[in-house]
Every structure is written in C-alpha cells, then in structure tokens.
Length: 394
Image 1: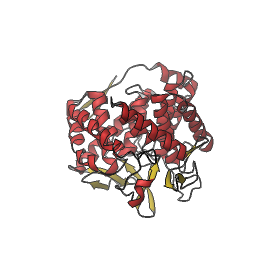
Image 2: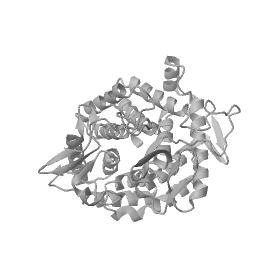
Image 3: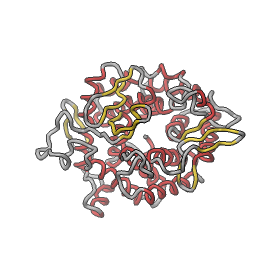
Image 4: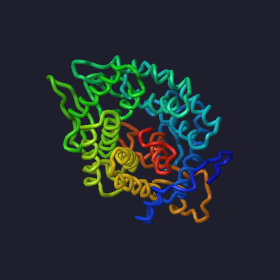
C-alpha cells in the first residue's frame, strides 16, 4: 500500500499477520490503516516544525500552541530531532530526508565534549541510527567518537559513568547516577568492537540497577555518599522514570540475557499493576496533577522489546498495542480522525501534535508539551507495530 504526505511517498505492507491476530482478539485496537494514518500525521507535523526551526533544534512547544522553544545546540534533546529524520527516511526511502538527517547529525558534533552521560541520548539516537539503518559515514564516525568520550568518564571508585556536571546536573553530577539514559548508553556501547567498552557498559548497568532497581520498581536517581549510593526518591513513583528503567532493562536483556530478562519482566509487570490507566499520571502521588502519556509510549517500547525476547511474548506486544491505541485516540494526539472534530479526515496544520510529554518548562513548573523525543518514540512504536523497524532499534 502507498500513501502520500505532500511530495513524500510512504510504503507499507498490505498484510501483517501479527496485527491481524491482535485485531481478531480485540477489535478496538488500531488497525494497520489507522497506524499508517497516525504515522502520516507525525511526518506531516515534522515538516511544520522544521519550517520554524531554521538551523536550530526544537526543544518543546506548550500544549497544542506550536510556539516552539528553539535551541541552537539542542541540549540532550537534539539527537531526537535527528532521530526523527532518520526514522522518516526509513519510512519514506527519500534521499532528501536522509540528507536532512545527516545534516542534523553533523550539527551534533559539538556535544562530544560535554560532561554529561546524556550524550548517550544524543549519539545513539542522532548518530548511531543513521549508521545502523543507512551506513551513513558521518553518523558512523560521530557515534564511534562518542563511545570513548563517554567511556573515559567511567569512575572505578563508584563503578559507573556518573551523570556529569553539564546540562543542568550541577557540581554534584559526578557523584550521581540516573536511570534515564541507561537504554541509550547500552545500545550505543553495543556498537563498539572494543572489549573494554562492553565491560564498562555492563559494569555501569550493574551499578545503576543495584542503586535504582527494587522489586520491579525504579528510583530515578541515586547519590554516592560514604561508600554507597543513596536513593533520592520513592521507587516506582515517577512514571517516565519507571518507563526509562523498563527500557534499560530490556536493552540489557537483549545484550546479556539473564538476570536482566527476569528483571525486565518484573519491571513491566510492575508497570501493568501500578498503572492500569493507559494515560498514567506523571507521578503516582499525583503531586502535579498532570498526566504523562509519553511515559506510556516509552513503556510500550519496553514491552515490545520484551515481547521480542520471550518465546511467549505475544501478550506484551498486545499490551503495548493497547497503550499506543489509547494514546493515538486520546485528546493528546491531534488530527486523528476519531479525535477532535475531523469528520473528513483531512490533514491540517495543527494535525499530528503529540502534546503528552510532562516537562519542566521553568524551575518548579511542569507542563504538558510537545517534544522531539515524545514524537520520535511515538512514531517508533507505531513503526514497530507495522514491522518497519525492529523493537531493539529504539
């Protein structure tokens, strides 16, 4: 089947037996055609965002306003803007889209020397995907340079690569560890052929899990003091932190097997039991009163990865499909023909906005916004459901 977005052609398989099986089991799930429509809306949205970015990186836009905060450097989010274009290239097979992705990738090189483990986000999503999917030389070189740049920050005293002092982490960042970047770091280091990089990656994963993982639930961060890591929050409370941890465990399980696979299964079970609503609160104690659908998107990616690792993983793929269905049909995603007031199913300028990312826009203030990373993860999950990419590619 071929559908069009402006001058872009998008190809999909006419049949997908796995999705047909899901739809037979539960008719409310998104169909292939609906998934294709949602992907088209997200691709259309990218064009509008790009038209207002010039050569900057889109950080976030409040609600459904399209009033984007643009950054010249992109912070830790910049790699996701590149990732969106790599993924768009994967969908469209457009050389123009691939050139655009490669251009963005080149602009990420200034982040190589930034003292932050969040460089793993930048260079896995913004560079390694271009190498993995297209063999892009520039992407390969940048990703290859980023691994030793990160590895040199490994501190044998605390057996990990600490958060670092840049990107808002502060002077104590070199004594902190965080769960957010675990998946990206494991994937980035898996591309290295050097044995010491594999060892550092696994030691970092073991330390992160020892500090932050407890019976399926995740603490967000931990601080090294008096010879041990001390956690700074209650395990499992922050929805996106839990989802980041689930994704990290699934990447560890894909890389090293047990015991990470058992831990990943427990973490996904914890999510399912603690968050029965597919549109979860930002925090289980609901201190902000905000939801965070983007956490469900990341959780769905973890579930899709877990399904791929288990011989009987069908139920986890089904669970992920349900989460994505709920998000696409929710008010947090605009322009889908079952949402809002779009009876003619026409694409408009404000279509394809996923404004479901809970984000700190100012000190002490969190709001629901549209972000490059939220859009990427949502489009990636949709692409996995129609077998455009593999679950372990994001």
